[in-house]
Image (cartoon, rainbow, N blue to C red; front, side):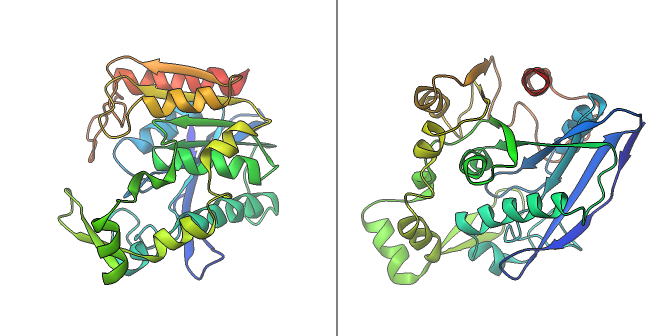
Length: 280
């Protein structure tokens, strides 16, 4: 039987709470913990993420997924984006703080995780993949790293030339959310954070210096983050395990909302490869 915690909120380091949930299988086995990190304009309950979490739990992991504290969600509404001001003030340094805070809380036993064996693995999707690549090097408690459809450079979202100058002059740019129809603000502090912390936020340097097992998974039909990003990650860490999932798009053929009870074949393949890697 899979036991689910319901939503829990812990304090973040930057004035906003981190909303999370976890799940595990009821048995006598001690289990590793997987921290799952969503991507840009994402959230922990997107699409088929809950079914994915259940599959990891069935395979005897504790899966903990959380919303980054400034992702635009709230405890009352963690799925959509009721707090666009928070979204606009998000940046990569704040998200790295969130990962460290989650690690700190589970280790302090402020969150009681039944059957946890003390090991912490981390899995990130899309921009979350880039973030966990950096976070793994900054948190020695994390002992295995896996990325799905990961970016290779945080500057992917930064325009050049006149567009960047306009963003700086106006202090904000807006991104249309196709699903919610919101115009989501991104304040220029996002760029300043990248510029000020360019070395700390270098995915390349983080991956080159990794000393833990590393898995890279990417879909061959990803039209949001080109598979060349995965090949760069592999180039920077020759010891990494790299798997291409044929015919998989950026979300491994899921979508939001996901109303089916079964997962897409491509998602199942990504789960199986990740479970094999984490169990080895």
